[in-house]
Length: 114
Image 1: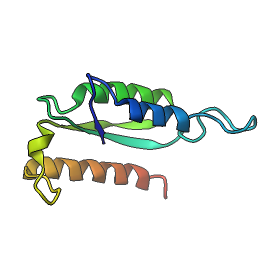
Image 2 (image 1 turned 90 degrees about the vertical axis):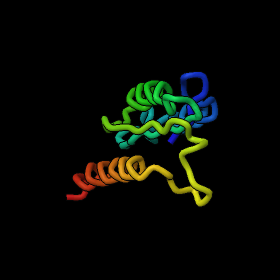
Image 3 (image 1 turned 135 degrees about the vertical axis):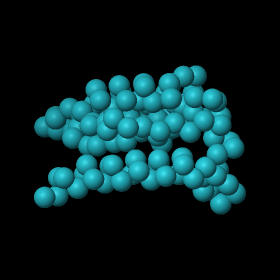
């Protein structure tokens, strides 16, 4: 999950991705730490779009690093109003969508276990 800063990913997230993507030795292939991984995208923002614009950038960044990004994604608008005191989502439909996204990821990854 990622917040959105000025219609893009946060500087902290981009910096972390950039550092993790660097090779540590001459015999290590480029992007080996991230290539072949799978991701689903979710964002939360106080704005009406819920971080959707940042997810567009994040999808491109991760795809360029060889990460398989599943097509479904979720943006949580008005994030400051979306969660209860205990951290649970207040909207049962949104909660179900996020759980479904997790199931999609688990199903996708489960195909590699057979």
